[in-house]
Length: 98
Image 1 (tube, rainbow, N blue to C red):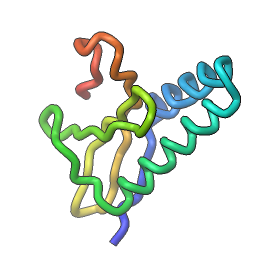
Image 2: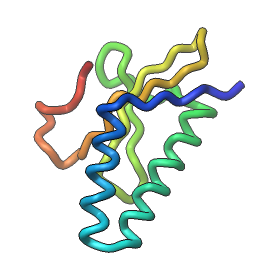
Image 3: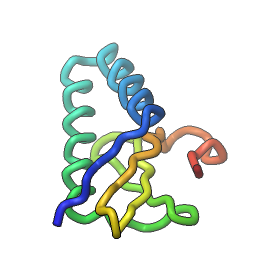
């Protein structure tokens, strides 16, 4: 059974900010970033049980981009809640552990 993906407002804003940044670099980079996020969502729909980073918060690195999705999984409700899209080159002390 597939999991439902719920993206928090914070994560959505971070994804939009990153996409805008990549638009300034190249139109293709922005499209590729969004494609990478969508691929990560597809992965999470089918198998969201990646390594736990902090308590019940897990992460999945985006392919070809220095970002990771931080999320929680509700096995009983079959829901993946995306909490943040964090740039992995930033200060690790600012990593989102909600």
